[in-house]
Length: 147
Image 1 (cartoon, one colour):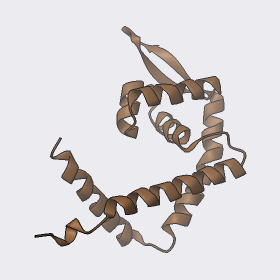
Image 2: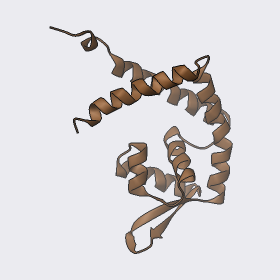
Image 3: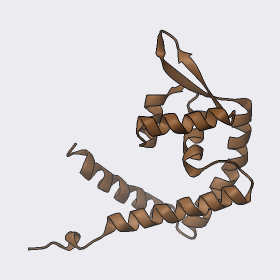
Image 4: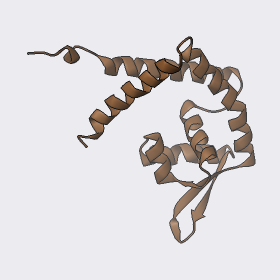
């Protein structure tokens, strides 16, 4: 016997929505001459909020695998936006810090990101947001229990 929930392709809905948002954000960043990909933005945003975060912690909070994070940090470092510093007491580990230029770029990018967030949210209100978060958390937690 099939349940109603067997028919609900919510994964497809979430996935297509994410792709649409990413694409709109990338287009806006490009239009504004901001030399960042969406993934680079995500990392810079996290690093700026938690200066000195480790690469592993960064991978965890952004849900990206460590090799991907390493690759993106390499690019950000080449652009002069972040710097790796050896962790005190463990020379194999690095902490990531924003450079002055990185902070500038983040501050340029933030209004663009905020504009895309506002556009996407449209006329939805605070209680819509609470419900949205509750639903997404619920789906997320349903998978967390089985790990």
